[in-house]
Amino acid sequence: MPVQLDEKAAIDAIPMTPLIDVVFLLLIFFLVAASLSEEEERQMDVQLPAASEAMPLSVKPREIVVNITADGRYLTGSETVDLQGLERLFRAAAANNPGRASVLFRADKRCPWQFVVAAMNACAKAKVRYKATTLAGPAG
Image: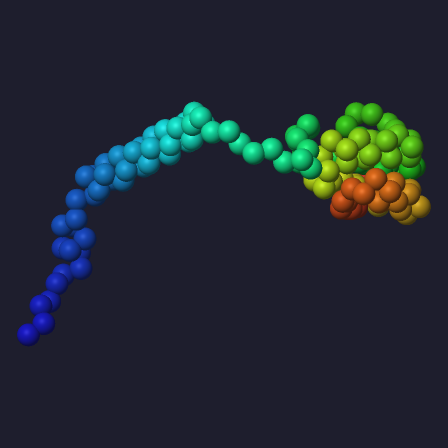
């Protein structure tokens, strides 16, 4: 004979406060245990092998954002640069972070494509990856 259980009575019978306390204690335990094991790994006396072709990461990799205005000016950060300045910037980024440097081109939708293509060409010469997007001009 099957036993009939009232669903409301079964849910009311589970005390939630001790359950939440146990979950928080487990969370704290695992956070502390993870940080201690990380410290132990760094303090081990191990002589690491050296790689002859490895290059240290000299600059934190970040995406270079180049804004191209409607009249074809190139803006990086708060500076206006010409096409040769862009190419120098891309070459420096490629030298500092080989294989990791990337550029985001943001062109005004009224910008002639010759300026965008010239900037992409400078990026390709420096062997840096790029993405492009279009900015909407003012309404009207």
